[in-house]
Image (cartoon, rainbow, N blue to C red):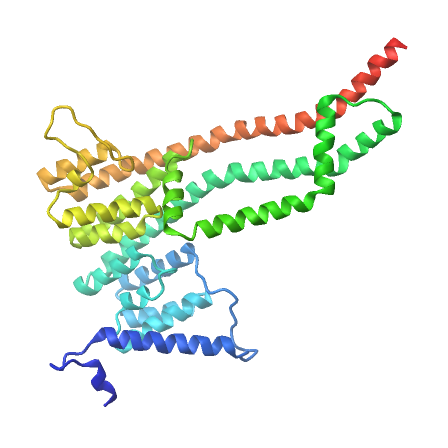
Length: 404
């Protein structure tokens, strides 16, 4: 019998086997749709993806529906009509169909890890166990919005100086290709000897004009090598540790990962998730691989009855304390140690998170303000060097004319 394969010898229904069967059927149907051209009226998507903003809008609407005492199935029906992203709409339809077949929403979300992060899936799983959907969705809605704002500010702090430098390099390349050759050609026809700085700039200009293909090959080779070496675990860990030690930007990397961890960890604890499960899920939320590995190590040590503060390498048994953890600050370890004595971890960490989040935003704002004059100095130096190199032969010709 077909349904007999989903029951054990005691006739207990095995939901995992049923979920795997649905996953295989979904993949087979998706491959079939990709292999056929389809109808003209059918909606075609080139890239199956959903941004964090679109996900937040989906959760926000779902939270509003649930708080308005709308049934989950009917809320998903309304959400399907209002979702504009075809990929996200297809996932929502699958959620609704799976719920009708006894598959939970969290199990459907777990099949799309690129869309739903581990924290979102874990919180929906908590709702399915506790029944407090309105509270879970409110926390998830707030957390997604805060993460979007924080990631935008962190990316802006990294991207803003890079964009200015790229624009500067484009302007320098333009001058090297179109302006410097004409000036150098005029002086060569006049037979005058060029100064050393001008000769250097002319040589660079000739390289851009004649050997530009070498730059393209070098750029493609660098990107390819970086992707190859970054595909291995050891190199990923190397770059993750290197990011935490970058000049100027190290504070942004460390503080943002700590903020992500504290926020997800406190949300899970407030939702009555067990400590070990909260540590495990939080390790999947933080973006940096070094922090992931550190949190898994802490979780494994707590599992063998070691305290979190001891796992953070905080030792209060001696008068002269030596703190060696480079990823988490010592004050954070002291807060955790205080909780282990007072049993108020969630409230203490919320205060720490508010403080760290404010310090991170202030640092990003100061960094963005500080980078503007630095970039301007670099622009003036590059452009000024070219202008001086162009003007030096004119000054030399003026001195020659005076002597005559």
